[in-house]
Image 1 (cartoon, rainbow over the protein chains, first blue to last red):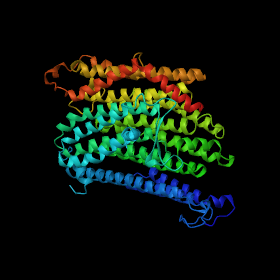
Image 2: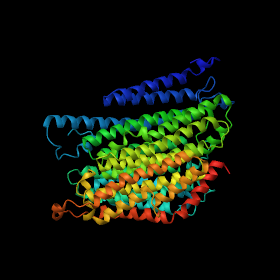
Image 3: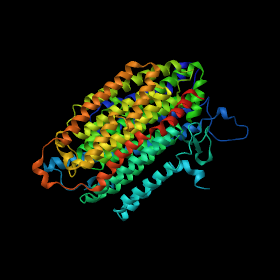
Image 4: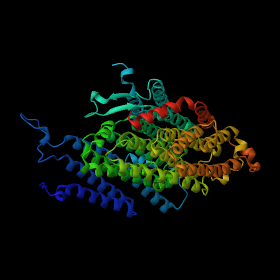
Length: 135
Length: 501
């Protein structure tokens, strides 16, 4: 985005990130399906990353490569990108755990629907599902 | 490199290292997991408790990770409040680990669960320790998530459909609030250019007036997300399900420890990053802390009132925890040294007593997993030791003299009274009266006559379930009697943080 002196345009990146986050939050709250909730979470996480990347842009923002005669004030802030990197790991963990919970919930539902019985003795299904082995 | 030079970081590194090796050990010999977790917790407890006396209220221990100092690197800082909470954490988690010994052994139908259980227990401990001692805001978020995800997994390990559903609800709550928290960190970083808590506080104070609203919005988002994570009343929709459907250990961990530790995060935000002495954000901070304090008081009373209507014992304890969180948050948001120290002491005492309620109720109900409140009739007559632990935990929760709860509540009430907040102080007393109502109903049922017919078929409760509950109850009394050793240091630390002396 070409930065202008106009205050609204200067903050456009941030405003867009917040709007995307609200879209994700809406999905998390309003959708009943667990999978759609997870999708909402992923939208939220992407919006935060956008926010951090936009934040790192300083002035016209050159790449963070140290060349003779560079001025630190004109370079992209690397810390915000590092934080995005950590955030990606964090959200990978969250997404993985939430999807595995969804899979376990679905398999329980299917089993109880097919047998119509009290829970069977097969209690280590979650363990096997976590390893990706279909029970 | 000697151990003493790296001592502060060991509080975090030891449980995390043990957690990393636990699954490998479990794949080889499943039975070793329990002993490995116990060893890990003993080592963590040793390193934590050996710091007692080395940390003074005015001179916290700090440690630069990788040798990088605050403006760029992550600093670990062990101050008196963090150390007190860390000591309580090691005791509570050790009790939870010992308590699960017989459950893990008898659980032959689901051998895979045991490894997960202990790994996640150690991982949650690592996250809690990290959250307590980190001095970096982004690091705090990461530790918050490690704790939350581990606790979530721990709830789901029972594999019951109910537990899976509540774990998912919990996960969605903490994940959504984590992203909002991260946005708030971004907002604050964009105007201050640092993540270190001490530096943040200095730079917020010198913000140009155009950027002050950003810092205030960030504070509002921090408080909002931490309120959801700590199950402060309207944000507590996920907690009763988690307590009611998981195992006793996961319920104890989440309701007693995780929520108490998140309120400590609120202390970090409200007292360390945004102390009341800041002039730039003074008006916004005052408004937000007032709202938070009232939310806490209301949560304390409403949580207690809702607890009166619970049929399931573990949901009742969850509402105890919700009410306790309200009290702690009210103390921290009141932001006077006595109230903050009282709030932190209440958090420690509350963690011990809620965990003891969970563990002693599980020992009373054994071999059943959970129990209705009405089903507890007469159980105390059969198992007097577990029942007396339950009674002591209830007394401490209510705040009877010579228990830990009394010392915390007295300090908190002192703080509120000195500030002239008479209505909140009166509401704290009202909430305490409500706690007397719902806990005395359970205690009455425990010792009421009934169930004489089944006396002969009583299964003996394994000692590994009774001893941790009894030890926690004894610890609550010891902490109550010896509270004069802890509270002055807490008050002094809170005063130096609030007044910036």
